[in-house]
Image 1 (cartoon, rainbow over the protein chains, first blue to last red):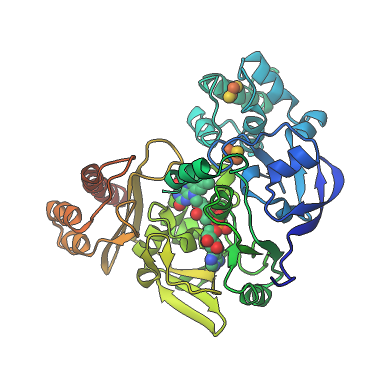
Image 2 (image 1 turned 120 degrees about the vertical axis):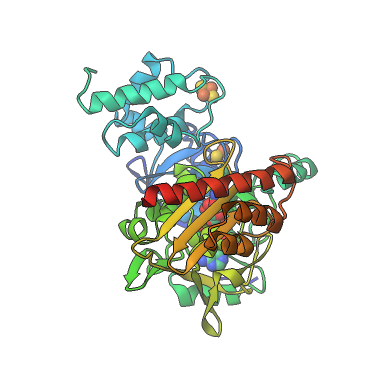
Length: 166
Length: 294
Ligand SMILES: Cc1cc2nc3c(=O)[nH]c(=O)nc-3n(C[C@H](O)[C@H](O)[C@H](O)COP(=O)(O)OP(=O)(O)OC[C@H]3O[C@@H](n4cnc5c(N)ncnc54)[C@H](O)[C@@H]3O)c2cc1C
Ligand code: FES
Ligand code: FES
C-alpha cells in the first residue's frame, strides 16, 4: 500500500503540562496511549465504544471520549487527565466534595466523572440539578445511584459562586 | 444496530477484540490533499471526521483495514456563515458548536434543538454534522432535520463540486449518495421566515440514547414539512401527513402518518409502538407549534 498512509505516527503534544513525544500505532486510541505508554492509568477503558464515559479526558479544553479519539490525532494537542488535574489542585474542591458526600464507592467511574463535571462547572453559575444530571448522563456509575454525585457537583457550584462557605 | 453486531464480533474474535485495526492513517492538510489521499488509497480510503461513529465501529472491528484520511484539522470546512437567505454550515462543524451558534439559534433553531438530543457532551464536543449526515443512521437527528428544513448538501469529488437535495441524499440504511472518494464539505439550509416554527419531538428511554422515534415539524408560509427518525431504514419525509396538516386536519394527518411509515420492530420497540408514538409526537409538535406561535 502507498507510503502516504502510516501505520506508526509521530506525535508531539502536551500532557498534564509536560511535553511528550511519541510514535503511536495508527489504531491506538487515546486511552490505551495514556495508560499503556505514559502510565497514566487514572482514566479507564471499559466499553470502548463511547457509551460509558469512564475514559473521559480533557483535550484542548473540552471533555472527550478517550476511546473515540486516536492517539495519532493528538499531535499538537493539550491533554489533561485526572493525574494532572489532581496534582495541579485545579479540581481539589470538587474532589473534596466527592469524598465528603460519598460520591464514589469503587471509584471506577470517578476520573471520567470529575472531568465531565468540571467541564460543566467551568461554565460558571449554579446549574439546575436536572442540568447536572443531563451533563453527566454520558458517564455511567454502577455504584452510587448518582444522587450523591449530583449533590457534590451542586455543592461545588454553589461554593464557587460564593453562595456557601467551602 | 451497531450494538447488536458488536456482540457477534466480540464472540467471534475473543481476546483483543475491542481494538481498532485500520490499514493506515494520514492527516489531510486541506481539501485537495484529502482528495489526493483518498485517490491513492486504492478503494480502502475512509474519511475520519469526529470519529464518534467511525472509531467506535473500528474498535468493534466492524470496520478493519481502512486507510484513514483524517480531515478533522482542515481549516475552512468548519463554522456557520450567514449567506443572506441561507446559512452555510461547514461539514466539520461540531455538534456542540451548532448548539451554541447564535446564527443557528436564530435562523435554524431546529438544529440547535436537535443537538440537545444527540448523545452526550463529550461526544458532541467531537462529532461533526458532516459525519452524522454521511453516516446516515436512520435514528440520528440531523438527517431528519435536513429533510424537514429542505437542506442542500455540497459534495466535493474528483470532478469538482456537486450539490444534492437532502431528499436525494439518504438512500438506505447507513447509505447515501456519496460516491467513493467524495467528501461532504458543507450544508446550506434556508433561513427561517419571521413566523416560521421549527420543532423537534422525540422519545428515548434515557437522555442521549438514540430515539425510539422522533419527529421534526417545520411550518412556513409554503406549508408544513414533517420528517421522522427511527421509523425505517432512512429518515423519512412524511408527504401525505404534510398535505393533511396543510388542510388543517390533524386527525387525518395522524392517520396518514401511521399509514405512510413502516417502522421496524427490534429490541428497543415494536413496530406498532413506534407507529403509535409517531402519531403522539405529531400531535405534541402541532400543539407546540400553535401554543408557542400565539
Ligand atoms: C454513545 C454514542 C451515542 C450517540 N448518540 C447519538 C444520538 O443520539 N443521535 C445522533 O444523531 N448521533 C449519535 N451518536 C453519533 C454521533 O452523533 C457522531 O458524531 C456522528 O454519527 C458521526 O459524526 P463524526 O463526525 O463523529 O463522524 P465519523 O465517526 O468520523 O465518521 C462517520 C462516517 O461518516 C464518514 N464521514 C465523516 N465525515 C465525512 C465527510 N465530511 N464526507 C464524507 N464522509 C464523511 C466517515 O467515513 C464514516 O464512515 C452517538 C455516538 C455515540 C458514540
Ligand atoms: S471506554 Fe470510552 S466510553 Fe466507555
Ligand atoms: S463509584 Fe463505582 S462505578 Fe461509580
